[in-house]
Image (tube, rainbow, N blue to C red; front, side):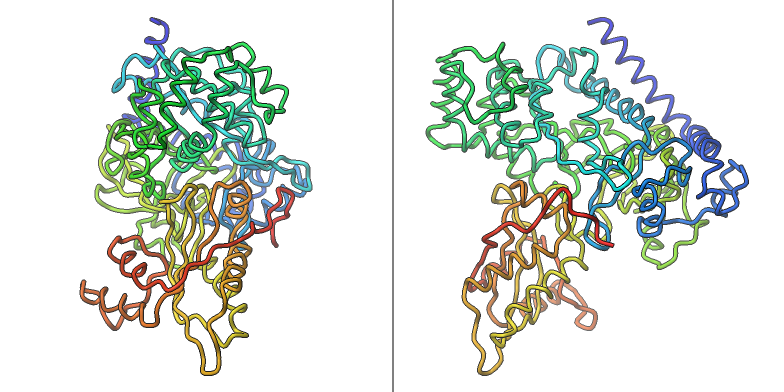
Length: 586
């Protein structure tokens, strides 16, 4: 154990060294990136001529979005192996949601990035151990899953960043660490069948219930899916534990092999599970099933904050630890106070991960951002909001991530941030991100179905409903039916729900295909509902001249007002089309 403690000490010293020398580390990172990629087509296009200094970089390299880089990324995807963005070969694409065409972004990455991600992961437990000691005395119950992957025309794999990590040798052959022992076998995590994967991960979690000290998933939505799974399948799980045999529906040979040594007949545990679940009282089920759980390890910042009340209900009020801040483009930093309340979470960006710049929020909405307006990591001001811009070893240069961050404080010379939101994202249940233009297109497409009835949409808004598991999108419509027209019947509205879903991005459609997101719901409102909404907004100080109906609502009194005016509710009765082989729209 002394070796583990010494390793923790080294990691904590590393964090201190990086954050104290933030400016120098950032200069070094930029110099390394520009030196390494000096002969790339991209840097040559902007006549960097081998320069590695900050001033030249800021003057010559433009601030860009994914759309700006799409031609280069397309060439790499189609098999062009020349040094377009990075000198190192692109090893794979990491997929992320949200192009203007509603399909996945393809973020190029290089093998070396896995080492950087692994480094950030290695800092999490040394920090956590400062707040929750003795985590080496038990196990973590984590629900981890892989998602489907595709190959680009040029043969490169395209998959989500976590699928890439779980399939890497870094994860599969990780050295034993008493602080990072998890209950789930690798075979269960790596099983592409989400039912079999979840079943065996839950089964192992129940077998090791007394040893479990922390329960987690990547996102809050994922942990809630696991809890719902328990509420639906506890009888089968209890039967397997009572008899020491694995359910026949688990057909994956590697999974069956992975549990054969730990699944033994245990009638006492099976009876306990049955006794706890028969009453169907799910309040505090996490602490009843896993009584030694110290905290939930799950992201509940940003869009995931909507799940906090439900997690509190199921966990009996356990603390929720948000440990790290990362995206498909790059892993950024960690929470140095992981046991802080969800609304007080601040992340510290580690300056060695990538080169960071920030657009002051008021300038980020301008059509063309001036490259010299960007602020360096160490020059940010507490209390101000910024949009994050990164330059990575994988070849992204001055790339707008789209995250809006609020500077809350500093740790040494490194700023600490509260994640506010993804820019332009209205709705999100899991990893889906639906923006205003997508929602608008979906509404327009669905409205075509009610035109033959002489009906049209006067106004609409939306929200996510996470009182159900899985959560789902709710779209509020106020309709106008022309003289001689009639209100469409239920089946038409159900088709409208599906039409909207067909227009949404592929990450949403995949979520629906795998039951991560529930069926979209349209709630039809009484005539005049949006006028009442405007009156309410004006009574709270909104300008009558500048008022426009919000396209997304989250304020409880507004939701209450809208829900009190609902005349009918309709759900999508089928899943939208989704295929892992579906090509990105051009």
